Image (cartoon, rainbow, N blue to C red; front, side):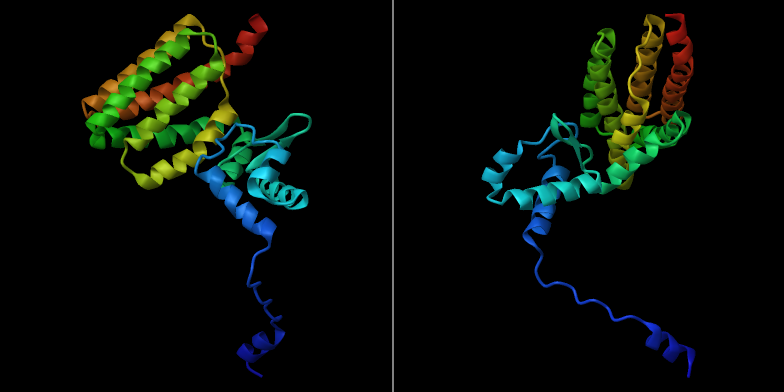
Length: 246
């Protein structure tokens, strides 16, 4: 008997696919789409169970099965006594958040350097007038946030600024990858308080980056982006000593 025949005989029968999906599977697809399109933004708490039952017209067991599947996929997170929160907008983002939190923070910073350095250079070549205007506005927002004491707000504004730089690169695939990784980077790095000198240097490097993008200085933009991440790296390394000295 030939090898082909032996292989064919040893194969198990393939299961026939179901022609119709269960109601809970349809609900999973519907809720996943709702999350992916921003209907429930990452970090927000979803409506309570009874409200969803009434809105969706499904039974409690069907809803719980669907929500459980989304928790398993990493899109939702159930917090006992507090409700269910959106953890990620896609399975890929969820995987990246978990992966980034399981490696050394320095590795996350290296990855950020690679992405943002290239994106900044591309943004200097391709940015539009509208994108430049948006960067200027976000720069002002970042300056205001850094001057305050709410590090959560400062971290969020900074993330918006860097995402805008990446979008100005004009590389749709890079934008998509960075959007998936953005939450992972923010989750892994978090926000640490800056002293006055560090905050001033941080803001100055962001202005230098925007100025380089405006001047379409690709090399200058890449250098500024790398310097921003290096400053963050130095700040992260000094954090334990800062804590000990307090």
